[in-house]
Length: 109
Image (cartoon, rainbow, N blue to C red):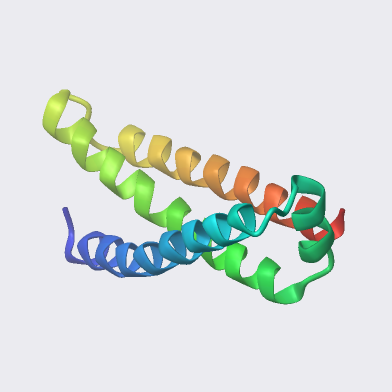
C-alpha cells in the first residue's frame, strides 16, 4: 500500500470513529426518548447540520472502505494492477452516490 493510501485510510478511520460514535449515541438517545421514525425525520428534514455531518460521514466511508477492500483482495487473491484500482474507484463511487443520495433524501424529505 502506498503512503498516500495508508495515510488516507488512517485519517478516514479517525473521522469514522467519531462519526459512528455520534451516530450510535444519537440513535440510542432518540429511541430511548421514545421518538418514532417520523419524529426523527421531522427533526432532521431541512437541518443543514445533520446534512453536513452525514456528508462527511459518507465521504469518509467512501474513501476508507475501498482502500481496505483493495488490501484484502491483494492479499487473498492474485488480482493486482489497474483493473483492481479501477474496481475500487467504482466501489468508492457507489458508496458515495448511495450515501449522499440517502443523506440528501433525509434533508429534503
